[in-house]
Length: 379
Image (cartoon, rainbow, N blue to C red; front, side, top):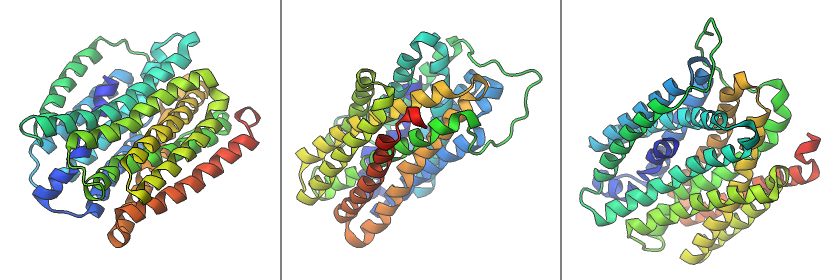
């Protein structure tokens, strides 16, 4: 259910070129459309990040599935930018609820001794769903009829099945009695978690900036610079970075939680350098290598950070704390992307991407250096 919900948020990624031809808009608008989604995610996390702690996990999961279905309907009825924006905002709301509530539910469904494996399941569902979305829609758009309709029709069917699965899930949250009032929580991090939260969230910020590059800018780079018009290939390239992220999460189990954060940053720097080189040389093989390398680094750091934050959070505040963690991550996925879109209008998408990767290397290097000098155990 978690993977199906997240899959819907990236279904439009390989379709932007088709929307561009149909509606007519610039690369800047593509990044704004993407940023609108990220704003929706952050708004949902800030406003409703702890609602599942109060109402229970299942009601919020049903709400997330409903918002995802409404987003799909907007894309099915799309006739211009307004419904495109509406669909992305609703998708962002859905992703925000899924990120915090879904992760907390998966962690709580596992016995305490298997909490680390549950964190892998949650992050794999998150990243796997995000990665499968563009691969799935790219294949359907390229080789099946109704390229702008069929992906969302199939997704609606999957959402219906997921709603049925949610009915069978046990409720893992035990809301207090009497029920606490529902009110926007903002960034709520319990004091006892803050020492762990800061470095983990910074590493997530750095890793998600790479994901933002691939989901919002890489498709345009493939079409305009590399002349790759096969939508299935575009979707597969984006899928690679998310698939590699899941592989990096598996590696974290061998490296260990505390070492995975700095090592993940180091591998992420290597991936960003390869991406920058691929842009300069207009090389698809280098872009794929950068996607895989950077995705592995992002996955290692992300799973380690989520495991530490989720384990350190008290039971009554776990949903709110995990939501705050995802707020920082989604700020990392949105702000740089909008900057690239604005810069791309002046310099072109390739030069803008090179500047972005240089800035991202500096940020990730700073985070990794801090983690090497002050390991998590010392914070």
